[in-house]
Length: 462
Ligand SMILES: [Zn+2]
Image (cartoon, rainbow, N blue to C red; front, side):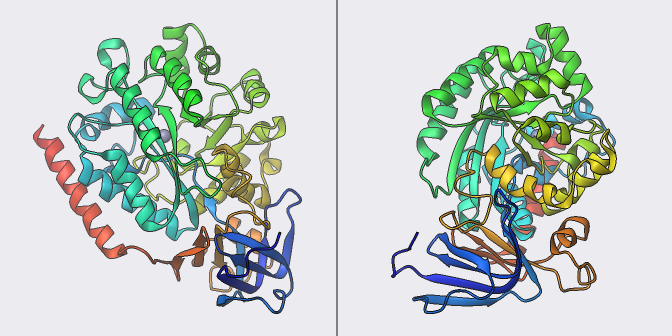
């Protein structure tokens, strides 16, 4: 497919390339040509000669080029409540943190989103997502603040507009003052979709409908949320099957396990992806595979909250789409996704399949193409192929951390987190030499600290 001659081109050469295409094509030394916001050509050896409008040539010697990483589950606001309730399981941790979270405002959420996004972008994330579900009364335009932070940074982004309407008085987990009404949540979610969702091929912002979890949301909000998403043609996201306590809660309240409950409320389908899915039996996994329901695997968060090990090898074997998630940074303080490639591989080897659980290339696929599938964007991002969007990362692998590992993919998955020399999103540079290009990283660090302190003060006074 020839690009119009007037498009600006970036040429990257002399690098190892892992395309993560359907055949796992790799080049020991190859080239990528970016024209405008798309990949024009990719292959072994030097770029074709005679290219017009080349605005930049990058010598990729000592680097591996991969698709940009895709994060499929996060809660940005938690950036300002990290390091708290560090020895709790999920339910105790939630109960400890809800009263603080319910005091967030627009300025805090903006600072937290910048911190979350910045940390991920520096580590090779080119598509981010935020599942935001805490909307205190009169807290300002939280969705607008989050979307603005992603657009300022230049990262591709999905906002999963969350909600909670099942508080303690209705048998739920959040305190009464931390939830919205059913009608209020649905109306605000519809408004966010109408205002911000872009359905085009190269969209930088998309919106999903995302009630928080079975234990914080009414059955009516699950059902009507699914109907709303389908009427608007957007995706559905929630938390599912995270812990044994959640499973018990579902049996007590609904008389069935989480997967059956999701099915009964319209929440299985190829337009749905769910975070965690740790406690799944064979028939749950078969139901996900049959319906094309996706999974956001969050290994570090699952370990931090002692939730368990998701059966990723069994899901992949059954044909379930699986991506990776940082999860909120109150349960994964590092906030990085590139380290989750390694953690997904290592943690799954502690499960039933032992050393055959996942290999380095499968881990890279989870963090790239798998994420694109889960977000419904597999034709646009997630692999390096002509005609797809130019979201890519140059990982430096000739430094002290990686130079003695011969295989480049093994180096970035098994080795330390590799530095990012350059990342492109939509054909535009976002990170260069491990620094964010479009925003002031030091200012973000200062405002995240200030807003974390302000929230702690307000929560202590309450
Ligand atoms: Zn989560």
